[in-house]
Image (cartoon, rainbow, N blue to C red; front, side, top):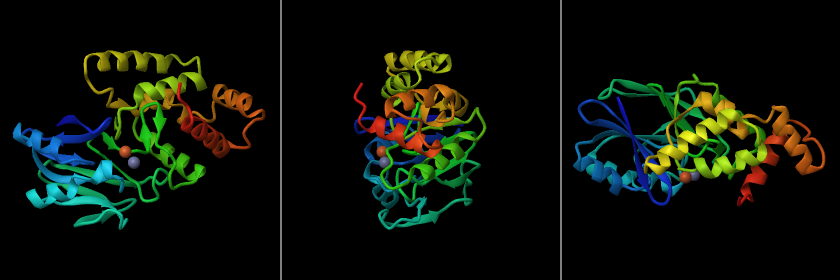
Length: 255
Ligand code: ZN
Ligand code: FE
């Protein structure tokens, strides 16, 4: 199985999980052009997985489906038009051409109907969990989004984290501000820097690294709580309040 990240727009990734014969699952084709370019190189899409309704994740899906006559799987949300097989928490998507199956997880927060797909050691989680960060909370509540992130992070530590955007280095700058002393994060950022300087995606990372380094998964650690208490002038009331304060801070962070 081969994993490919196709860059799209400014900083999106369209993920391909490919078998030996070029058969590929395509995740979040916000644009069809990069997928068509990959097809010219021997990739043969057999199914589309859609994590959430934002245009940068679904914009190319209908055109690919019309051209290729392949199934698309996505959340129950009428903001995703077209012939989409609707899936929700606990469902399974089987892709016989690749011999893999994906478990569907409902992960509300970035949007209310956001789903993630976990299979073959890979997690495709759209704009919910990013390396060293998380998505903006457009349609959810803090406790809900935190629960979504923690469900993802509880998957096996060696799971490959395949996120929707290349935000790792920018997220790292915020993480450093929140938790200055974190050797696991610094080790990861050093690898990320090497990959980026070589013109490669920072991703995939692993969930084990995120658990040790991502501030949004570390709201219970004394260091993160202390930073928040100092910033807020008082300790956050509970872990959801800590997460909310962190997310709000990041929304306005420009460092
Ligand atoms: Zn989004
Ligand atoms: Fe996005």
